[in-house]
Length: 261
Image (cartoon, rainbow, N blue to C red):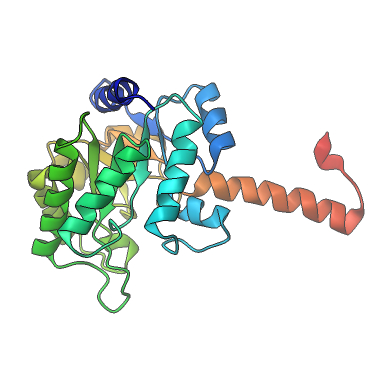
């Protein structure tokens, strides 16, 4: 990908976050699904750590940084749309490791990416507040050093990691915003009132992930609550796999191919 092409995609992604209405950012799981989503009219895409791992028969979080970058390249090369990468926790505890992950994501074709504060250790699942902020600051510095405006998302994992502390979530997101994150994200918020509180506490766009039963709301509801971007997580991959299972099971159990009709 040329620098000019990447600059154009990067500028487009930033503009999409601030135009009227909510930005829909679906998560393809391979090159074919990326191309299909572009043909359907979506304007940007994001990778999903859960979906990308599943395509390799692994669990979310089990891929190496090299494997994740290969997946980013696969998706970015299959579409003309801007692609934001799910970069998990940056593949390293140290701020410098996180900064290197941002640089590698940009080299792989991404024009945006998210860094989360999940440690990967169930006994201590969330990085301490100050260390989390330093990690986002390092990511922001690396993003600003690129030749194009990389859209950095700061992600708080509290509600996905059995720490349902809304006040701490808001404090972290505000700190990530101050550290340079362009978009803020707290997957797993329990209800629309929590979404409203988080959105009202920030001056930069709030992203919301639909994919959790009971905690996924309509586009209209999320827009009214102040959400600026909606991602789909691994849900499109899960829907595709359910369809595959139904079709294959029909043939296995009944010897028929009605699913072809």
